[in-house]
Image 1 (cartoon, helix red, strand yellow):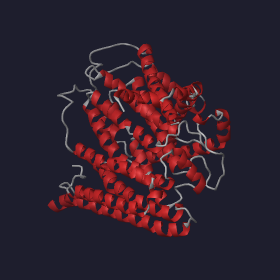
Image 2: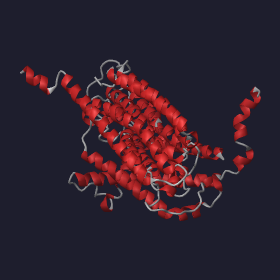
Image 3: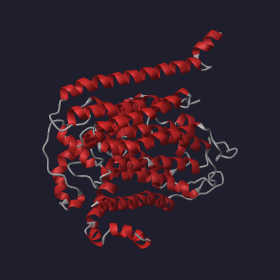
Image 4: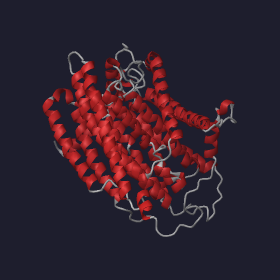
Length: 119
Length: 415
């Protein structure tokens, strides 16, 4: 039965790609084609772009990404726990409290260290 | 198991008989009519609706030239976008530049099939529906980053970095705020979540449910990059953010994807907290069936017509709430945005999981539901946790402000 679902989703995926590509292709055919050098430059408020764009950027973004990973993996544990809560009973609840407390300590530590502060 | 059978595993899953029993024609009709006909139509008229609503909020009339009440405006917009010149920067990464909006639109489309619009009226009902929904909806972050990166424009890159930071930050509370629903249903299937609400009433009618709904709504608005969380495309700061270098229909795809995502997250909020297509009072319905189970599609739709109507009315109200918030609130500052996610939303959603577990013990545990005790215990807990988290956040903000070199007090004392 499960294969049913994913065959449909696969069909939807292909259809959506087609649905998205078709107007772009039609635009390429219908639209005017007047190429010029300055038109295909990068638009930065009318000034020419200076320097390389693809550079390394600040660490702050990566720190948030790492925090996200921690909590996202936490939810991977939380989802099955929540789905099976009825049959797991009190022991699982206590275990989850301990697990989340450990993570909360991590969040508090990050907070105290100023990681969550956007400078 | 040897290598040969390992390789043959996908074929075993898709046994010939099973593939034969797939109603290909029916599915293609459903896809063409509902997914690529009705949903984009709804989205097109949502754009029209937003322009009308925003016009009224700003004491204007809004679009009224093309057709009666401007009703043909979306069609005119589509024709305009499709006849524009296709301009791609010479130095951009051409393939990725094309692929990025497609990816965002695909992710918005993929959310929709698991939404139960009526009793059993979900296109598919995988057992992992909710986690599937959240997984595919987060693909859009990747698409936004690819769009900003491939444009080779500094504003685009800034917008993309902001978008990724914002999306990953608000994804945590979004994902965590639906955990109470899973806990109360005992299943990840969207149809099961809907059935549970048919049986027990809407999930929003409980203190942890209300808190979770508010958290989900805030996170939803942030996930679709709308005001007050529209920093990734803040016009006054970084032109148009990640879609600065997109013109014509390529820009149209971003536009379509944004509104399709708004529709999708509204459907999510409605389906998991607002009881889908049901009315607040108890309702006894038909047994649940999906497209795969062989029941006639037409009869399924006819049975569900009132439910679809109620569902769409709720989605309309939810979308209107988003428009309203957009017209009312100014844009946040980037540090406020991030600290609000991590210092308010994440702690509250973690606490809420346990309050939800308590509510489960009082109400959903087999036996007689004790609503009085449930409300009596969880409502104060929810209130206390909201007050505590908010006051810690406020104190923190105050301390930060006092410590910052440009704070008013410092400047005042220096003078």
